[in-house]
Amino acid sequence: DKIKERKPLTRSSVDRYTIIVMGGIAAESLNFGGADGGAGDEMALVSFLTNLNPKSGGAMSWNIDSIKNQARWGALQAVLLLREYSDCY
Image 1 (cartoon, rainbow, N blue to C red):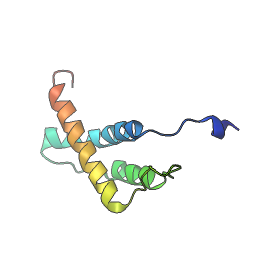
Image 2 (cartoon, one colour):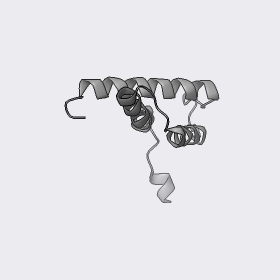
Image 3 (cartoon, rainbow, N blue to C red):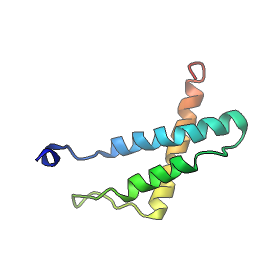
């Protein structure tokens, strides 16, 4: 019954998770000119997105193209945040 009480995962939450996962890759790229690590992070994102089960008619299913786009978007957002808050980073 606890499962029934859970709120649905929002797109905003998916986006936040994506930025966090891609943030390490983005930081490595910014600091070292490329990212050698991050394969595990990318696989975690792919696994997370492919295991989402849409429960409503308006929810999207994640295919390889939408996952790649989400990952690119997340990496870009992470880079922008790291640049904006570079003094803190």
